[in-house]
Image (cartoon, rainbow, N blue to C red; front, side, top):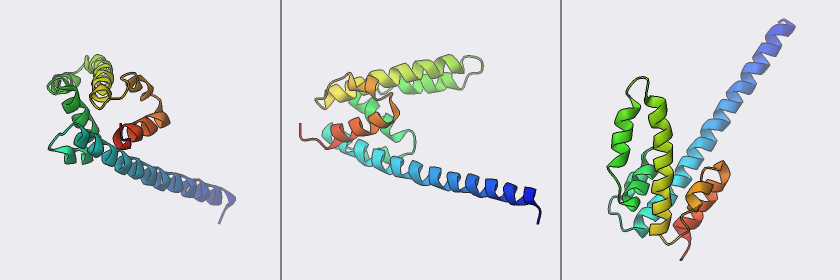
Length: 136
């Protein structure tokens, strides 16, 4: 066995470990957000709050229903798949997602400006948890 093959094997082992860790953390965050958005769905009296478990789109569905503007994301998603303008629609989708979250927070009696703070990666998990499980 050569020195280069040992280094290559070590690099592959580190990369595989990082991949496994990333998958575990991602699944944990998905489970946490699903429970949080289920609780938010219950607070707004949405009967299909189990939709929060749909990966990537579940929390958005709950936020759209809470904001009472549920048809906007479908228009934006249709535009997202049109070539050459999809980047612009992606930016518009992000802006509207903040608006929907703002309205969602206000619907459950939380400050709307928390939606802007939700753009900060770890802070959004804390704010969603407070919004979901606080008694206010």
